Image (cartoon, rainbow, N blue to C red; front, side, top):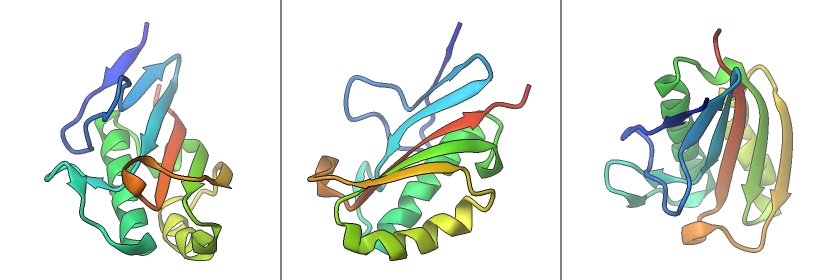
Length: 126
């Protein structure tokens, strides 16, 4: 049996998917883009502001499931421009201090033409 995450503290799904699914001791969170859930759109400019908003969105999903960044075991990061890699890493490192496994790739384009997206897999507290 799995549990669907649905919190208003993170952006609503902009397609046919869930914010996250908890299953068998793990949380599989969909990629978070820098949508501000209070307004339902992207307000952040630049990679630093957008990455910070992404982390806030991830935090809301983790908190809804009673866990935090320390429970994350794997991330997948998508950047619209690999030139933002170092700056993105500076924001990322403030949150993922336990250094989970990670993939980071540049993509041609992201939804709403944002600069970054991050998805996570986390261990749930049992």
